[in-house]
Amino acid sequence: MVLRCASEDVAAAIAKSLSPDNVEAKGLCIGTDVEGKDVVTSVRADGIGTFLATVDDFLSCAQASIKALEAIEG
Image (cartoon, rainbow, N blue to C red):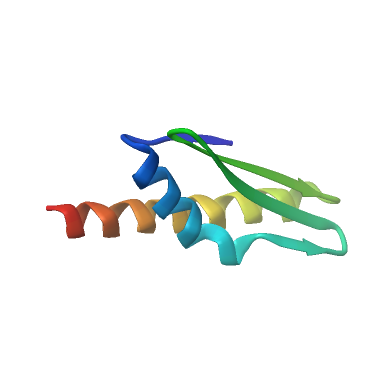
């Protein structure tokens, strides 16, 4: 998944807020990196249910991070 941000600083802040979600567990691997203005996240899961739940949770967390940054920046 790629989330394009307004600036490299915003991308870094969002990626940092999502870094606790970086996981390597049996059947699940999540990794988030910053590439310029993009937050790039990869998700691998053994089952489709786990994959969909993980993507849904990740997107909810990303949305919360974006809203928090918008509130701070005004």
